[in-house]
Length: 222
Image (tube, rainbow, N blue to C red):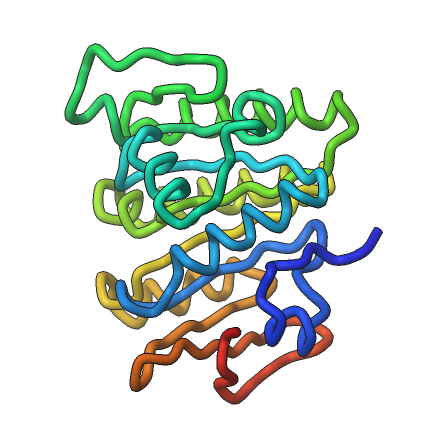
């Protein structure tokens, strides 16, 4: 099975894309382009008939869809079919929020067990349909803010282990400015590969370690 193309020519050309079954952590500050990277990856993966399970911790599912639309990415044809959302944010602000065909409203960031069960259920549905899957967490920082970091690490070990056994690729988005160096290092150790993004003079750059084609010096993301 070919690697997953991100849609960025420089990244895919230098790395070959993302490998199936691996756990990737995506690090950068708010201006680094993490969301841009994820949204383009989603667009590329859906076009390649790869299913996406998108876990939200810092925005609602309706806000996410609006952001895709504002970037000219039409995910509407895929909603409920190969793109499903686990919304771990909306109920915090709107207790009456309800599920629909493509978004499940979870109980909030403290309920890691509920998140794990919902993730396993949606993954299982896609696997039964013989679809390759990417689990995307946008973002991991909010889970770390609300929970004991050790609890989050154990949660990550469990869900990533299950994902690997099922052939699923996992990507965590992490805001580096929100965490101490020891937390950043622990997350990196839980990952197979680490992608770092940065913004410099109006241009975005990346580097990646932990893969066969590492890029250890920042290259422009284009």
